[in-house]
Length: 436
Ligand SMILES: NC(=O)c1ccc[n+]([C@@H]2O[C@H](COP(=O)([O-])OP(=O)(O)OC[C@H]3O[C@@H](n4cnc5c(N)ncnc54)[C@H](O)[C@@H]3O)[C@@H](O)[C@H]2O)c1
Image 1 (tube, helix red, strand yellow):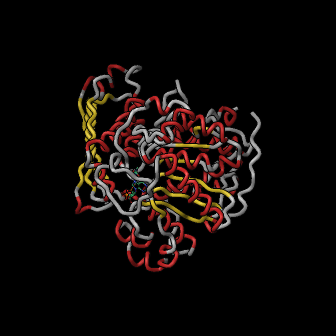
Image 2 (tube, rainbow, N blue to C red):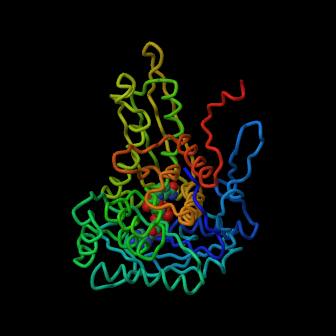
Image 3 (cartoon, helix red, strand yellow):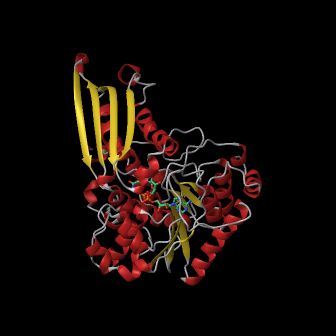
């Protein structure tokens, strides 16, 4: 397969964030602080990651950003929507993730990023309500207003390209329905104010219509419906989702492949979390939690393949809980108890206690996704970008395929895609030639 031509990353890249909450403001403040030399981009593959090229004997391991043209952090401009009127400085203070001593050093830049009025309906996020909300005669009209925001942003900052990342709250659990099946049905449903179209889909539609690639950081359907897939294909745009893989699920996709690699059985996996940020508050609503639960639970089934190993995993009892607990703010604590079965059926237990910081883990993911999506578009890649599954709890995939959840396979896929993009040999790890 011939590698694609990649257009250069010249000019400015606009990153549109839906929701200026904890994750978004931690991303924005982080990029500004890094740009000013006040902090380092720890956790970001695009900024710190290297990639081996050629044989192990060649000793070639450049940085990823040296082999593919990625937008420079200096050329990024942020914009976004929220239902609250706070600017990014105030929103970052409210989120309480980053210390005031850092935020105060970049206060003017943060204050300049003020949220545009949101498309919001409490029917889809029960625990929230805010004043900064658009009014329109129907959802089509609201989509037109979002499109106008996007065009104004582009003009105002003289942007060359844009990407959109959903960092808004998790919406209630919804299933695919008739309104989602084609572009025509979707557009009719927009005009008819069909309840099957939650706010997130209004933004997704607006982004794709404005030629903007889209990433979905939450577990809501959003771009993951046939109508949006058709629109992405028609517009030749890359899209990706769902639900950033940050704390406990990231750990699960590290540990579970290790247990399975040794063919140890698992009787039960109990996961529980406490967190006290706004995300935790939204997820305290059973309908929003259901969306999250579905996203978190499917991981083990796909990694462990109980259909291939029924004696080891068929009866696995998997429980996931999230409890809203305000004293911890964004500093989540996630516990896992894994009941293992070893040689001759002897039982063991593994306990994990991860004292993590949700938005500190999510921010580098937002940045990487924005830069890689922009790269994909310049490389002419459209539709679902499976090579970015690495970043998601519920990776989107082609119909008929199962998603790949194992973090190490996902990383290999990501790096092989980059090698393919620049015409380098793919790495299979066969390595027989070293012993000839
Ligand atoms: N932090 C993580 O580790 C992580 C991991 C996976 C997924 N997520 C998801 O990322 C999203 C953001 O997380 P967060 O911690 O920043 O939450 P947050 O509550 O701090 O921020 C979300 C923001 O979105 C806004 N919002 C909600 N609906 C909106 C709409 N329709 N339009 C515009 N703004 C809207 C809210 O007002 C809020 O400010 C959540 O859906 C969360 O589930 C986060």
